Length: 421
Image 1 (cartoon, helix red, strand yellow):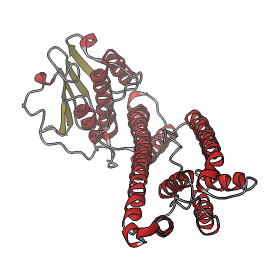
Image 2 (tube, rainbow, N blue to C red):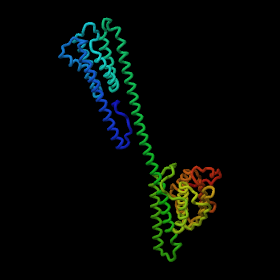
Image 3 (spheres, rainbow, N blue to C red):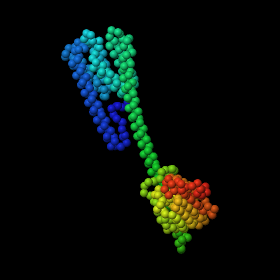
């Protein structure tokens, strides 16, 4: 059991720990000052009144008064030792010092008060076996020495009950303080778990953005390398081989990046709130894909400025990933994008079959899973799957702002998705 005079506090920061140490120091200082004043008051009461209860020389009276009062000074530092000194001196006074005629109490009332305080302190601080010993010994001490003419039998039950009440009250306070400490520790543990969760969510956000940004641009590198022999005249076999080497290297790098990001990826994380691309930048995304050699055309209906930042970020990332998938898995294929932002955000990205005669190899990435997670995060839906013409289609319906779910009806967006991309 820790010192009950020390208040529990939040120790999550260095400043909080410094403040806690100062509070502990101040609390102990005031408690010790109060203890010294209490012992001094008890001593000043015990010394002048000792001749009224005991027949003792004047020179010995200060010593006996000190034995009665000063063990209280150990109430915080070592309560069992203070109790032992007080109980031992009480037994010594009762057996060796005669008391005045008509006084049936073998020691002073100050001594009884000190014993009560020390029993309370022991019950508050010591181990349970020590508490049991102190309770039994104190009850036996007072029950035998203060029996008077009636004998020990009638005092046998009174003192155990009296000190038992003191011990139970101290144990109740001890339990309450301990419960508060445990609650504080649990709150600190919960705060630590929340911090760890925030770190994991930040890792997931970074992983998702790395996937969306790096995969998009690396895919464009692959597309440019694969389509360069068809777009540029006079490509020699050596140059073609160099382009093929660039394409292979870029694909390997992309696959390694996907493998590393898989450690950080997680589904169902909250949308980001840091500055990110908005819906207005979707057109620049399409222009960038065209400059990279993708055969793309698009139509946009509605006002992109009406799209909220959060929904705009989801739209941008979904369009970015859809274009990356089309470039990677169907190099040279024409891509058609339809975007309608009038009632809700309706996005359709469809590509034809690969112009090179074979689709790019799949790598079991997180593309469609990430797009679907982004759509769900803002209250939208997304589906993707192959088309009858041999191409691939991605369709998403998002609210103009998160929470505007009335714009998302139950109409299926597309056929069941093939998530191999």
